[in-house]
Length: 171
Image (cartoon, rainbow, N blue to C red):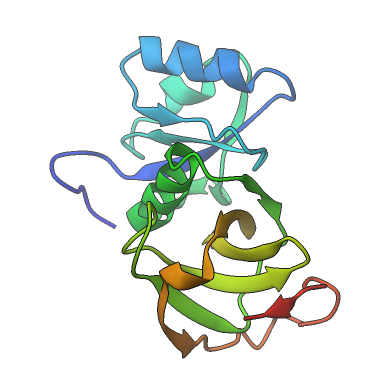
């Protein structure tokens, strides 16, 4: 992944429990763009130059940058934008089991217009599940049935089971 619009890509940062806000403030004061979701994903996100990660790792409260071995792996820009938009929408949002089965739906109306995610039906109504694939973490945001547009099947990952990760039905 390259630099978008002159900005570095997003990376997931693992911080000590209870130190996420402090680490985010310190990183922002050092000039980094950070995002700490209000919903607990156990991670925060920070734009950074992957070749210059020492200042991030030296920040009090930061444990590591998520990646493979010592190589950090960037998060898809669209995944961060989707979670940020859901958080700013004012709609109910909650942590959700990571999903990759079912159908992806495009939201055609409402404050989440243009977003795509997996739609699930639970007792209280419909939720749009938004995922950060690298972390295998998801959040679910409440949606109205009338907002849903086109839906298409998701190609299931052969390594993933479809057992109890989804106790609700896919819309």
